[in-house]
Each structure stands twice: as C-alpha cells, then as structure tokens.
Length: 460
Image 1 (spheres, rainbow, N blue to C red):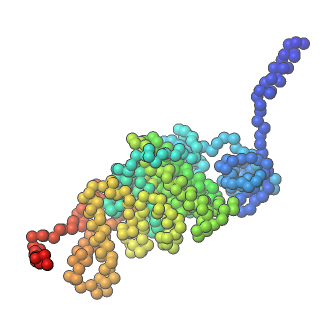
Image 2 (tube, one colour):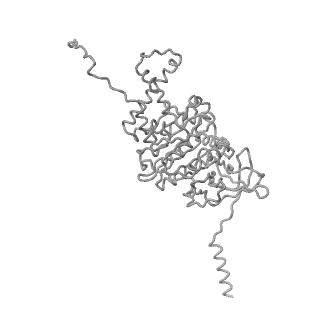
Image 3 (tube, rainbow, N blue to C red):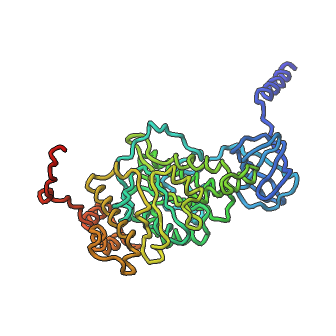
C-alpha cells in the first residue's frame, strides 16, 4: 500500500512540474479584401499562424496589426476555403529562412522555398528574417571601387564597394537588361537578385535569357511575381537583403540587385491601407517612407576587414516623373542615382544612361584625381553639346561662335560611341578608365606668356 501511494504521488508530482502549455487558438471573425480579423488568440505583430479552411486546406498568415482584442492578419498564400469561425492556430516556431552557399544557382520565393524544381534546399543554416543592425560608426568606409562591367558607369559614375545606388527609369527602357549585364560582368564574389512584383513572364526571361547559366551559377535569385500577396512581396525583399547580409558576414563582396524598390513600397502601401492607416503623399501612407530606409540601410559595408554589399535598387518613375514620391524619397537615402532616358532608348542608344542626370556620390573617394577630373571634363563637353543641340540640328549655329561648343561638336561622335555598349560586351574597370582618358583630351590651360600685360594705371 505504501509503495502504491508513493508511485501515485510521483505521477502527480511529475504532472504538476511539467506545467503543460495549452494550445492556444482563435477564430476568424471577418474578412475584407486581403485583411483577416481574428479574436481569442493573443499574438504579437510579426507572428505567423495557420488558418484551417474547408477540407484539408490551410492558409498561412502573418500578424500585421491589432485593435483592442482583434488581431489583423494578412495572408501569405492564396485565400481558399475560409469560412466564418475558422480556427486560427499560432505557429510556435519563429520564422526562419535558409541561407548558405547551397543557395547559389537556385531560385526561391519569399519564404525561401525553391521555385526551380531542382529539389529541396539543404541550407547550411537557418536565420531570422531580420538581421542584426550594425552601428554606423562600426562600418568600414567606402574606399575601394567595384567593377560592374558597364563602361559608362565604371568611368563616369564609378561605384564603390558598399555603395547603394538607385536605377531610375520608366517602363521599357532597359533596366532589367542592364541588371543582367552587371550580374555577368561584375567582379563581385556573389550576386543576389531580388525580383519583386515583376510579371511572371519577366521572371523566367530574366533567369534564362538575361542572367543565363553563367550568371546564375554564382547568383541567388529571390522571385516574388506580381500575383503574390503583398506580404509575400515584402518578405521577398527582406529575404534578398538577408541572404546578402549572410554572405557579407562571411567576408564576401556581394552585389545586390533589387528590381524594384517601387514594388516593395507599393506592397507596403497595400498592407498599410488595408489595416486602416491614412494615406499621405499621393496615396502612400507614412509607414512606406519609414520602411524604405529600414531596408536600404541594412546593406553597405560591414565591419572593417569584413565583406560588403554593393546594392542597386531600380526605381520606377511613373510617366517618367522624376519627382514621384518614391523616387524622391529613394534619391535622398541612396548614395547616388543612375537615370535611364526614354529619349536615348528610342534613339537606339544602349545603355540609355543619361550621364548629365546621373551621379555617384562616392566617386571622389574611390577614384584617382586624374580619372575624376577627366570624368568631369567629359560631362562638361557632353552637356555643352546638348545645350546647343537644337541650334546645331537646324543649322543656326555658326562655327567659331564658341570654342567650347566647337570642341564638343568635334568630339561628340567619339563620346557617343564610348557611352554605348553591346549586350554581350564586357567593359572592365581598368579598360573603361583608359578609354575615357583617350576619348576627351584634357582641357588645356592658356599660355600666359602670350597674354599681354595689363597697363599700370599708376595707382590712380
């Protein structure tokens, strides 16, 4: 009897010390558009959950806001089979994504799941989607140049390792093709490409035709086409940055190409408006302009002696409006901008880079003085010709009226050829600089010995 009581007490003691946690679940009460409301399930913003639909179907969602006891959810997958009162179960495991060298040559979605049909990912590690914030004073300064293989950029807008630039253009002027050339011709160790909100056809064409087998072999592609949920598009942009951060922490020189930053902002706008945030500038809520620097500032150089992330973000200028709210905000937080001109594209000038409107803010720190001064001279001569272009085209300009304009007319043919580049033509950084030094002679200083002296007025 004593042994029986002792065994029973031991079982009771084990029961109370285990302190089992009951499985929490809530229920779906409302669905409007892509916004779901849940009650009875306390969760924090960023938590993920599973909603049980009819049959065996489930919908994965993420918490994006709350009000009183109501929790706002945004689906990550297609909404099918949901009904009032559907069960909502939180996912206990934190959202973690795969990273590692096994991702090279692979195409994944915003959750890190493979899209290329090459089998499951056996990633080296799984990390949280949000990386550690680096103290800006701990970052290495931008002091070394990065070869992107594009002659006009290498010579006139030299890119530094750890720089963040914007590629501003309207639709159909060659942004994606230019990004594909960079992936094939750059001297970076690894390229991470984020295709955010693009058409599904363009995703396949970019991977097969523009990127090619050679470019894909040392690249990681994160694709979230336009028909994905806005939350999935946001996650894809964050995953692209997180993968680049991982390789940077491994000491690699990473080239990050994101197409496009505008689609990222539009996805955040959809979410913010759906949960009731008031619109501000041209329909964009304030949270959009807070999200942009949070994403961009994660790139750049790491700590001294470590790796770097050199980032290019494409920015769609709707109607070729350079004052678009997203374009204006991106220009302020990036380290330079490259503008593609529709006029040049229509003239068959490729790449259609507007050298007058483009600038690299770190170029003085990563170039030699002779190279930098010759690039300035190139822009001055090119700009002088553009100013007189209308007069020249109608024959109203008289040769000899202005020596600088005459000089520009003489050299504009060579300058135009210098700025153009074939799709399969690589232009290394050293070759680009040498060609720049040859295409436009340096400005000659006037011979002071031939200038007559100024008459001395005797101090009167």
